Amino acid sequence: MREKIKKYIGEIMIITGSGLFSYNVFNFSYQTFGKGSLLKMYGAAELEGIAYYYSSNSLILISIGVMLIVGGILIIRNKNYERKK
Image 1 (spheres, rainbow, N blue to C red):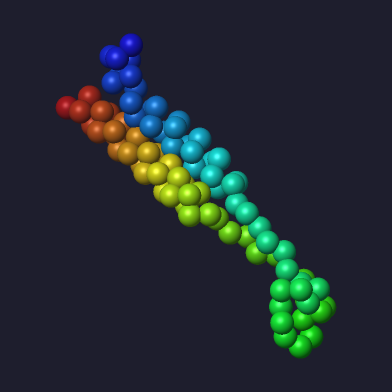
Image 2: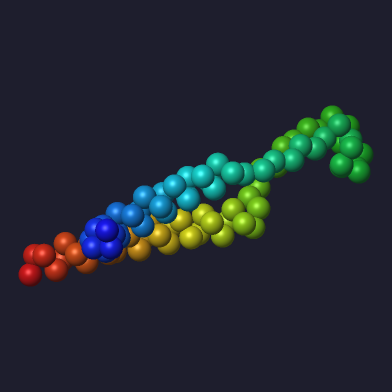
């Protein structure tokens, strides 16, 4: 089992990174504002809006996912380069 994990570590990293990245990219939050409730300015009663944002945990996990994907690609490229020698 350990040999198979070592053999396919690049592919495992890409799959794990893709899952982590995809899950957290769609894990955004939003906040609505308008109708004069949050905006304290003249004429704000007609304004409506929505703000989308990521939490700090989601940003960290997105970054880790990208690092795993890039690391997996580099490992696979290195293996292919060594095979050609």
